Image 1 (tube, rainbow, N blue to C red):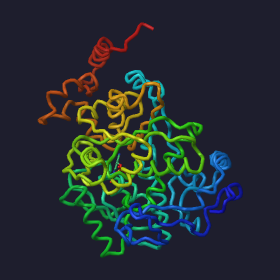
Image 2: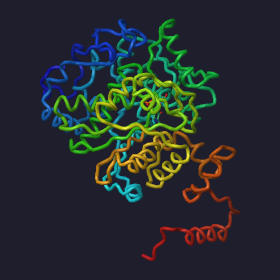
Image 3: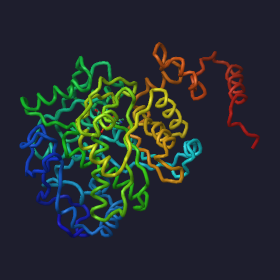
Image 4: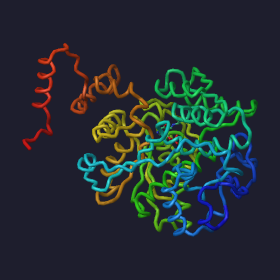
Amino acid sequence: MPSSTTSEKGSASSPATFRFRCIGCASIAGSAAQDFRCAQCGNLLEITDSSWNSQNPAALKSLWRERRTLNEALDLSGVWRFRELLPVPASEEHVVTLREGNTPLYELPQSSRNTGVPRLYAKHQGMNPTGSFKDAGMTVAATFARQAGYRWVACASTGNTSASMAAYAARGGMRSLVLVPEGKISWSKLSQALDYGALTCQLRTDFDGCLRLLQELVRRAPVYQLNSINPFRLEGQKTLALELLEQLEWEPPDHIIVPGGNLGNSSAIGKALLEMLEIGLISRLPKLSVIQAEGANALVRTLRETGGKNLVSVQAETRATAIRIGNPASWEKAVKVLQATGGACEQVSEIEMAQAKAEIGAEGIGCEPASAVTLAGLKKLLQQGFVKPQETVVLVLTGNLLKDPDFTMDFHRGELFKDTAHERESAKLNSFRHPPAVLDATLEAVIKTLEQAEKSDPTQTNG
Ligand code: F0G
């Protein structure tokens, strides 16, 4: 990008200045192979651009703010609005956008009271066009797939990536191939892929098996892989952090807490934070912490058992199907940013996650189960003294409540933990449940139910 930041409000066209850098041996390349791995050492690639460092931080902040008032397609996107810190395509015509980003930062008054953290916020990425944080990365990666002239794009997914990829492929005039574990993803995510026209394969394996197969496929067939191994995805996902800091008037929070699955998102947020510090957009780093489900805790174990040196893979099992991942592809990137920002890595139980999800629902915003690990994790980090009550904390909610209605219905009907090892313990969640009442269609029956609810309402006041 040219270093002037004021002359090109609606344009993304410029010669490419970005390069691929290996996260292992740091070798630089102008192009990347289909598997996005380093030709020298086989480690993952990331994108770097020397022009990012020559930007004037004050000029960038005012340019990005000004763009929020403009009506050009690129400026309406909460991702491309930050294009000075993204790889940009050769021509604006290639850009595939659904007005992603621009997601709200909510206060969480009830959770603030419950946890004793007055400055507690949720950055709700579930408010993206397809209902998850994946859209922020997909707009960038789909754009580069289109620019490269690919007819087919492909991903392995626990559901959200496939929904997002299918949508962006459809908008960009490409075909999409989805590999998902059979019976292990929510119907609403699967239905999105179908509706957006993806060729959807439900494979008799888990997510890790799907991803392994995709790695082989991209070497044999002319498909472009849109998993988060694709570094363009992570560049788009960086904008979550840029937008968050803009919403906080560039005053960094003390903590950002994010769920961890394949570990692309934590890597992207961490990369953004480090770049922002280097450019001078922020003056100190928030601590970036990753929370996993106990049954899918590869990063937790990797850090505890090997100090982050070797991946400890696990056989993943959790009702939060989005993060049911045992062999996370971006674990090395995540270890680096966790260590660079001084963040923590924790795990939470199925019960803790279910309670946190109900609490976020009771705030009137809701989220999918995987996102709720952030609030459950915060409680643990407070207990450990890692997070202090007077600090500012941002939870990243990655998916919309409507992404997993089965989980929510099972929870409220009291069936989520039926016939599982957690059944007894789950009794403590009863006060969070709001099961539907099935009644005769009479006025008396409804009034009686209303009166009973009023009597048993703990929040009832005379005012
Ligand atoms: N939250 C949700 C709602 C997700 O869908 C995912 C990952 C994560 C958190 C974890 O993010 O992988 O970047 O660490 N979903 C992927 C998918 C794997 O295929 O939709 P991560």
